[in-house]
Length: 208
Image 1 (cartoon, rainbow, N blue to C red):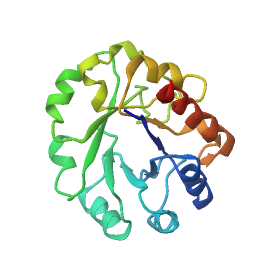
Image 2 (cartoon, rainbow, N blue to C red):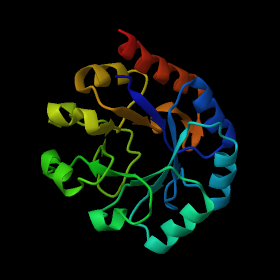
Image 3 (tube, one colour):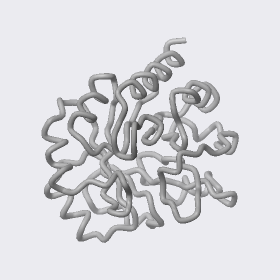
């Protein structure tokens, strides 16, 4: 099965269009103001309007209020919600959208248990744990911690780039990979060549 690709932390229309042109299946819009990759509702709306069809638009939230998430959904046509904080399952439902839950890979995390707790999620996004940072650490974690029987439900994130994504896919066989900092020229500004190299790496493994 082909590995899906999400380019997260998009802040500019030109980056979104280039990511899609190069083969990304999804783009991620960060609605978390402390992040250097955060977008406003107005920015997000403009980005989504420029996209061609069949591109999944993912909205990322971190411990956000239900009222604000509903406001974003009302004004930005998101296809999928990504909860990247300490949300309980009840915090992730009720939006009439499929959703995924990010799991920060602390040493104590039991992924089988997380899979049961967030059983209504469309998938689990696995990211590196770093105290005080909900994501975007630029660091990878020990992929051996991912149970083989869960890989097909996993979106692998955390420190991925064109130099390690082939090894990651070959070792884990995740449903999808998610990259942000690994394809940037600066925080929130994507580098077209890095995106191209990343996607080429994914395709090499899938076609081998």
